Amino acid sequence: MSNKLYYGDNLDVLRKYIKDETVDLCYIDPPFNSKRNYNQIYLNQGKEDKAQSQAFIDTWEWNTRTEKELNEIYDNEKALYSKQTIMLMQGLVNVIDKGSLMAYLVSMTIRIAEIHRVLKDTGSFYLHCDPTASHYLKLVCDGIFCAKGGDFKNEIIWRRHYSHNDGYKFGWIHDVLLFYTKSDKYTYNTQFIPYDDEYIKKNYTLTDDKTGKKYRSVSMNAQGQGEPKYFGNNLLYPPKGTHWRWTQERINEAINSGIIYFTKNGVPRYKQFLENVEGLTVQDTWIDFYSLSSHDKERLGYPTQKPETLLERIINTSTNKKDVVLDAFCGCGTTIAVAERLKRTWIGIDITFQSISLILHRLEKSFGENKFQKMDIELNGIPKDIESAIALANKVDDRTRKEFEKWCVLTYSKNRAAINEKKGKDGGIDGIAYIQDFKGDKKQEQELKQIVFSVKSDLKPKPSYVRDLIGVMQRENAVMGIFITLYEPTKDMIQEAEKQGIYENKMFNLEFPKVLIVSVKDILNNHRLNIPKTQEYKVVKSAKYQAYDDNEQGLLDL
Image 1: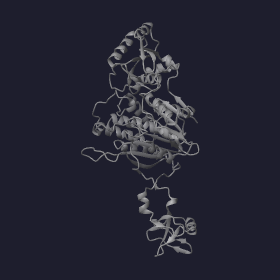
Image 2: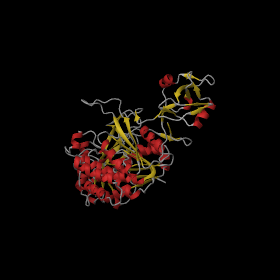
Image 3: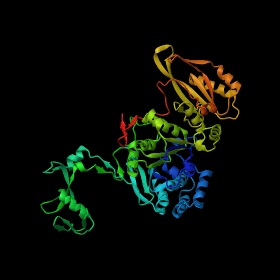
Image 4: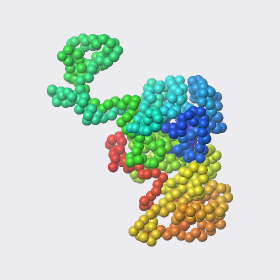
């Protein structure tokens, strides 16, 4: 099975392309507005910011699309929703009304139902959220998983920060992960945290007389009344209110191997040798790693990026090699990068081309160009012909209204331009790239000079668009301007661009048109921005390089 990366709405992708019971593990980290005042969300107060990029959207709006999704749950034509889910939605509408919070919950409900459908019977699901909405999301997951034979396993608390000043309330330093399984038969590989030196010094204080190995003395009994068992020739009853932890067979083996010994009072205990333990068993509170800091090598500049350690734990716990891992909100691709490193098959879905571009860039930089070229990756949803490009440009969905511009700029620049994320008016700039050159006539000083992008999808592009770009170049002191047009440029536009002459890059002794017109047809024919790779200004910082160790699971950091 190929790895798959889908560009589009995850609901559409799940329904059209992901078959029933084909996924072993799904992890999602859907966006939510945890920074806004919770009362505003709960009481539907505050104006929604429609201009915010969907890649970082943290607000949800009740609209005709959401109304349609809610009615779909009520109608339940495909029997995806349990009676409990339908009643929950009805009750929540009465309690919190049809606002941004309800829109979020409806959106999550229909997507989680599709995730439940694509999970194998042995599959697991992790929902990453924060305390702002985790209580509602647990009810949603209960109705989808538990009502259909699945099970709630854990509410995992991840301590993201050591401390946080939240003013006049307790510091908010944790996220929540809700862990569900589709049935009682699921993959679970116990994970361990290695003991530190202080723990070993404090607990492994005893030394075996024969072997000289360090061990600690551990009780053989636990709470709950049980039957007597033989320890050698002696039939011993456990203390009142307890039972012996081990089976008779295991006790016999331990007696023969000398692991069990008896205290002066004749109480059996066993020697837990340090060399035989992997560490502390991971529990439901994860405090051994934090969120990424500005100094972390793996940090890419993506605002909701999670550390690879988090996904390593989840993937290692709930899958084995070659299992299929799905992330339906894959963002900057942490799940995908870790799944690739741990030799799992992966499926990623995201609604923004910026994320798709970032993921491909991350894989190439993390694993090296040669390994990246050999990866079996199936790309879906990215324009491959003029018809699909026109369809992308004409999307009316607010969430994807700038996606055409992003695709044009990032594809043509080979991911070396930064998208203009300004809300509202963009000042005529859809993207910015940089080229290195000498500063003035001083060859001993260098600087990065701007290349500005403007994208238009009008059926009949005008020469005035080129003149507007020239004005932006002058305002921004840019050395080049690139005008990308969905439809073929007119002769007047080409002449207007040619009038601007040539930009001479003295550092590399190269010449470029000051204004370059590029059509989408050119992009589809693999025409790309060809400037020297010096000190690049990329969409994201480079991910740290990692190389496969073909003999071991995982990677070696170089």
